[in-house]
Length: 138
Image (cartoon, rainbow, N blue to C red; front, side):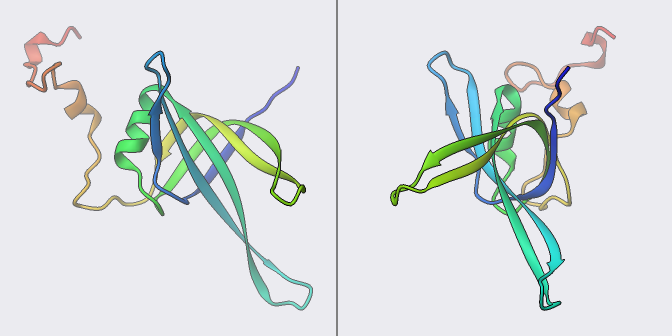
């Protein structure tokens, strides 16, 4: 049995980039930075930043592109992959890439950009019209 799961809590390094596959599936890419404070050999505090490239698919991709911006804190869960590539000088480089399966917004949100509440989303029809309580089947 094998298992590959990673949880990252960090800040967006850039605004999400939303694209669509030729089949119409939404895909969103962004970077997340995590910080760790350590002491260097001289005993001075030092911040170490690790960058992750994140790919998110489907409805979550559209939601991330709509509501997230550079610097926002997020919780990302998914599978970790190491991508190897060669830079212009011919050196081998590595990038940590996360195929996200879950994304959660954390921290406070700006007042000018409210996140939709689940109840509000569920109470809107296809054209954004309100649905009466009697129309809900549960």
